[in-house]
Image (cartoon, rainbow, N blue to C red):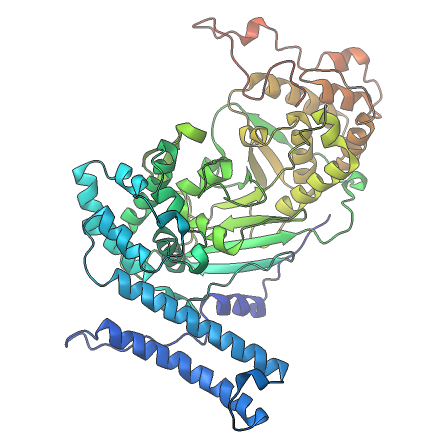
Length: 553
């Protein structure tokens, strides 16, 4: 089995903790609450003094090596050059966050225009440079909503945003290192500070700015704002040192040159198909969600996929937009600990906020939620390829998908307590391609990892019947993961029958199973007659959500 094992030694935990609570964090200014509060301008000066002292130590070392003229360009020592550059960047970043804090806390904000004008004093987001914030105005149509936003929710957002220098050393957020196994742990108060500054469009370079949502009055874009405003509304009743718990972001990378699951002797484990229910309700399982390589990339644009919908329900996952924004061909992202705050209805342009949600999933002792989600980006078949099935079954595509699935489902310290994987098949269907191939890859990878599989197919009776017939035959003959994948490779060379079930039947025809007749192969899924597709009450045809009978992909 290919994959990584994330070290959980004390040394590793200490290293990660340093990323969350750096030792070099400037001490907050001591304020005597019995006297008048320290003015904001004084606080700025005190914070900058701390940074300047650190910079002075580096510069003194540099000047000692170059002479007394103090020309920084003459610094020859590479280590000193790097340290000096880092100190200058830290100072610039501290000045930026202090400016944002000063602007936002300079007085009450009572209208959308006042909020817009305030943001324009520091933001680099070009979306906000002209026009009116139609998105916020559309969200706050009712006077009651407007009053709550400006009197309670927005002041709480501003207070959270002002915690950047207290939550992070120099306001610098640790990020996942691309292309290698990595794990970072953030307190939920740190995440709240990050999301508050994303909402207020205050990150340098307009990174992850909400400006595009502020300026759009399209219903689904306004709905996205509503999910985040509701999240901040819930936080507004909590002190700044809450909510309790942590959010873990893990990047798992397949470091092997080849994924050799076709040699695996692991048995095919139970795989269940559910017509009802949702993946986000399966707290006792490792949840799997289909995503794009740019994780949550459509959240701040006009698009909307399954991963973005999950993020809107649990907004704390949006920190990945900053710290783990891209998955390459060998990596996947696992997020653990995000609380669900909202109910979601609809998808794409029909998306809407459907009300508050109280998350009753289990918690760790520190208050962290146990909900764990593996985000996998299945490859979309080449749109120029005339047959999606053969595109997916090509050696390169098949190996890539197996590597991804193996990275997601192998036993890691953060996912070892989950005996089963829950996958939303509708979400994988949105990524196009043949769903029979996708199901076989999921089944092989989960079984090879020693996990069972639960597929949620949203009333797709046809898929359920075909898959369960195939599963029964393979279990009856004690087939292994390796034997399944060898048959998949052999089937890729056949002229597979068109329509749903063609891949499953072609697969069975390539398996070395005694006493398996052509009649048995042809009959898989046939218990589902056309008459059984009618509902008893209305007589209407049940439409499969994965496509028509003529579907190739």
